Length: 484
View (cartoon, rainbow, N blue to C red):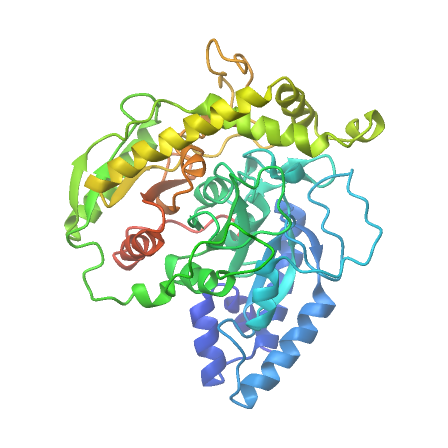
């Protein structure tokens, strides 16, 4: 194919549409990958979503995929589909810098993370590594190494984080799929800010290696333009890997659950919590858009009840585990190496060093109690629906919007940490539950709003089915970003 208009249009297609086009012979993986690489060349100077672009390797992989499709022998579920990878995942062929000037680049860098290895096994074309804040420590994406990643809807705003590069890449057509990590909202936050779909599966469903200091909280998950594509990607990257001992029992493919009947959420018991019982100040535009999404679920046959889970903001529990992880991360560093870190990461690591082992074990107890209470809640409700975030994207280059405050009387009192504006996301990392964000509208500035769907542990299929129902019903349709 040589028609430039057609190649540009390929960047608007979903993974499912690309695969169908390959099968029909309408275009080839080479056409799709060239279009994506051209798109990256256009948007990268504006949004700064990538840290490395593997053009040569991607085109070589695309040529091999095209040959398989010509022979009617596609290999795996994603043969020839362009995919980006957050730069926290090991990917052989180059260093994984994790957004940090402290990472030493010498060495073979010959190992793939489990999810990356699965992508290769299924024929996906890896086009590049996407930006992350240093070691994924915060809910926005900027770092001393790579600078600021910006929102495709408004370049003055943040993309969110820590998988902000992946969200911006998907939103701008720089590959339809990406994989990210989520330790406190890091898939859902940027997906919500950038108007795409993001899913944090049950902890361990996607194996993670190497285990980092945040690993008891961190999930890996798909980021895509819709739930159907995300289900396909999750089916590829899920499954046991001997390097991750936390892996749960193998689960049925999620793509099959999206076609289980035509009713989607009919009869599903949904608890709608607009503000966690008044604990969270939600902006009116966000509240209205989320309520409309809930009303659409009711129209689709779900039973809706306004009900709040038994949650008193567990931010101190989260901080103890998160800040403690940061302290462990930098423990081997000398002063010269610590001086290279993001100042905010140095601050939370210093806070983590002040916790004792008993503090940490107390947080573990509180986490287990929170999980018990959420388990009891889901005995009555199949799904919990909340705003993904109480706000829309704010100024790029900041950790928190103006006016954010720490928890009064806490060790983090007065600190404007990213947890001050993400109260709907990090609790479900503590409880290890599956949670997704679906776009459900825009605010007065045209910035995306997300609705969050949460199920009990191992309820991944139900979350994905409900999200897919919203897409099928047109409730997830929002204007395209300015850069599309």
